[in-house]
Each structure stands twice: as structure tokens, then as C-alpha cells.
Image 1 (cartoon, rainbow, N blue to C red):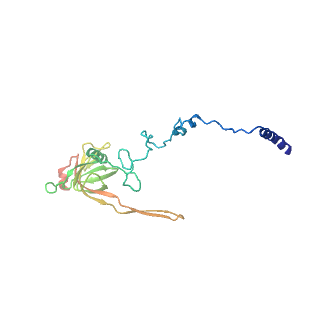
Image 2 (cartoon, rainbow, N blue to C red; image 1 turned 30 degrees about the vertical axis):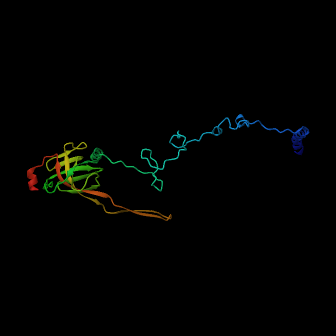
Length: 245
């Protein structure tokens, strides 16, 4: 093993002896043309020695020579940062809905706002009539009669004492006949008045993970709207039965 090492090192020693016998020469590699000492300014710019900066953001690189810094002032169309926001969070701009959009959203839920009620000039409440209707408001269905009051999830775009027309009527019925929709009755409607916006009883949400020291308690009160049913239209009502009732 030692003999092999000696034989491998022998050519290196011979090369060093031959090089030491020659006169010493300074081996300096020629400089590139752009580092020529004759001209005071390099022929190539300094920026050409380095690759251009890469932009990994979704926005394209700036073309005006700027370094891409964001403006301090907030512009809504660009979605920039707000200079008055100390936490640096994005400002959420919520554009108000038009009256047409509000009306379409209310019709999807199942109601239409007619207008405010004038108690001094009109009395929408009628005596009891022996008829019922099944209406759908949002994702809930209610069986109602004239004079009943129901609680629904809070209805947007309506105030207290507003008159509503509930359009999604699934079924109508009296003592003599019953009409079932497929799935709704086009010519039927239920009229109601908004009495109040209230909060439901508090519901406690308790979470626990055993042996993890994890306990969380939260409360929730659902927003509700109280409606008073004033009239059911779309079915003939017997006057004799109404008087007997």
C-alpha cells in the first residue's frame, strides 16, 4: 500500500522539480476587453455583468425604471395599502346595492316590500277567515291564517310597519277545498305587516376537549323579524263559514 502511494506521488515531485529549474514567469490572465485600462470608462455597462432582477409577484415588473415600491396613498382601483391603516391590512370596499338588486334579492327570499303602513288612513287587519296557507320564506315553511303572527329570520331591506307580499305560496286550503302548488301557486299571495325586529333567546355553545385543557363558551342570539298576517288571497272563501266562525 505504501509503495503504491510513493509511485502515485512520484510524478508530482518530478513535475515540481522541472518547474523549479525554469525561470520564473508571472502568469497573468488577460483582462476582458470591457476591463481595459486604456479607456477611462468601460465599454460595457455595469448592469450587464449581472442578470436582471426577477419579479415573483403577480404584478408585472415596472417599466418606468422605478424599483416597484408601492405608493403610500391608497387607490381603490389598484387595491393598494391604506396610509392611515397602521396594521397594514387591506381596506374592504363594499359597494352599496342598487334598488333593483335589493328587490331581486328580496324576491329570491320570498317577499316583496309594498311600502310603509299608514295607521291613520288604513286598517289592514281583517276579522278571522277560515282559510290557511303554507308559505315559504327563505328556507322555512309556515302554515298561517288571517291574524297569525310568525317569527322568521331577519328580513333585510324592510323596516317596522312595512307592508309585505309573500309570493312563495305552496298550498291554500279551506274547509271545502285545498289547492296544492307545483311547487308554488302563481296567483296566490299572502299579505303581512312587519311588527318588529327582535333577537331570539340566547343559545350557549360550549366546546371541550378532555385532557387538553380546552374549554370554549360562546353565546348566540339569532336576529328575527315578526310578521303579522293580514290577508290570504288566491282562494274563494265562504262568507257563511266566515260569519259562523
